[in-house]
Amino acid sequence: MTSPADVPHLTPNQINALVVLMVEARRLTNVELKELAGFTLTGKDNTKLVDLGLVDTDRTHRPFAHELTDEGWRVARQLHATAPPKQGGSTTRSLFVVLSNLHRSLDRLRVSHGDFFKQTGATAPAVSEPRHEAPAPAAAAPVSAAQVEALVRSAYRDLATAPGAWVGLADVRDRLADTDRAALDAALRTMVGREDVRIIPVANTKSLTARDRAAAVRIGNEDNHALAIGPA
Image 1: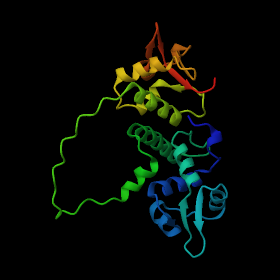
Image 2: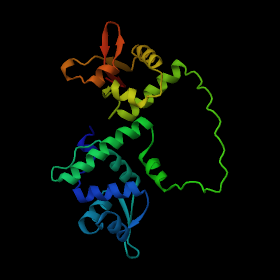
Image 3: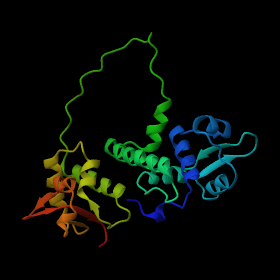
Image 4: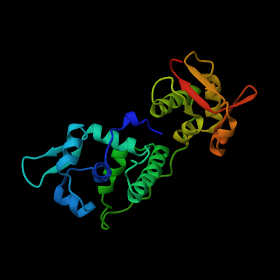
């Protein structure tokens, strides 16, 4: 779960504003916010989000218009892996359940939140346009051991809170779901010999879930469940 330090303290209303702006992935006026979500972004809520650098508000004319900044996109994405605010009611908690599941799905698909939501504006091709059968996909080229290791390192960088932090192999495998299991296991066994790589079993096996156990890699005579890359 994301560290609270990664996400500023926000009220349910401020969180709702970030989520709506993320989902629409465009500049919204207060009139549009009211029509879409039943609220406007004004007063202290607007001031705080602007001061935090999460929202850019155009006040040159009315109605005011709002759009997520790059930092706003980052925080909105982190909300997907954050516990709901204590003062949030059932609606806010339900929203966080949806965000959490969306976060896992996009990770598996390797699609960014920005790309995913910006695609919602795409229109279907006109009926009059001729349709052509897509050629059968070519067989995937074999992936080398070096390429698999590069994929592991890339997945680790995306998942780790800092270099050297521990990441569960279950999360790594989810990121690399399209990678052959045997090739991934072989890469992990090779990487454990690298100076900057550590792969270990979890000491408290009772804390392991079925997902953790299924994702383990056998090295020597032990099942290993966690990966760290970087300074110890």
